Image 1 (spheres, rainbow, N blue to C red):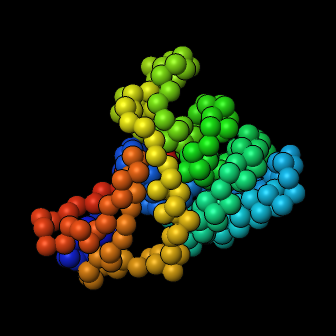
Image 2: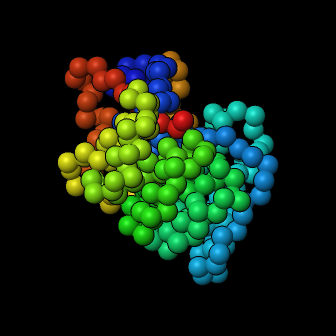
Length: 250
């Protein structure tokens, strides 16, 4: 990923145990946060509408198929497939929510697919997903749990849920899960998911994998958790800018 504006693209360190509530909200979480895969087929949830069900099923199945072809979760083809899936889900909008909820709740669905469903529900920021996400933060699979925690945080502060404070007390203070739950219980800003969803809908898939070692960092635009938009180009000619994308998968 790019490190300095106007300089050379260099490698940066990514901490997999922490999530930053601003930058990780957007594309980079998706690109770097590919999870493990399984050989089981994508389980079809109860029908919420034939057209929406088929579309969501096909999108998630494509990602899973790509995961099954690769040995490593960081393979670029996997995160490209995940990014393509998220872009299409954002274009579907609220119509995709019921089926994503059904996939998340269906324990026969592979964990990697359920984790992706939770991630997408966070970007869609639909309150209908809150009960399923609250249930998923206690899932036995770490990737499902982590993505559900982050998705709940994107829905806004939830300080009246006793279960969350009980879970927080059980978490390791050094873990990403502790950070996720603390953010959910204490964030003092009002979520504005529209810019994030719009950025995903308009994302140019052809620009993926455009940063290369030894070459100038390509310009890009990101929206943070509060909806504010940042562009790399606005920092050119100023002090060096270090971009660190912190994600929490485990």
